[in-house]
Image (cartoon, rainbow, N blue to C red; front, side, top):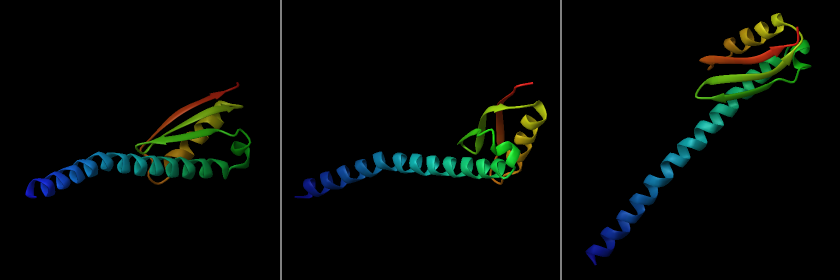
Length: 99
């Protein structure tokens, strides 16, 4: 009987150990998405920049911004806005100016 109880507890412990990383991964993905949304909202607050419909993604408090703008000054402005968002550690500015 003691062996069954021990085996049951062992199985439960192993199951819990395998599920924990998945829970943390989901939490990280949610945090990444929330940070990307904050950056996108900050960029889209500028009507000129919103028109470019830039793509923003996040991972581990770093954000990546992709898309095209009309000129280099707009590219720099997007990067500056993203850097000011609380929680952003680093900005990968992959925007390409047309000029």
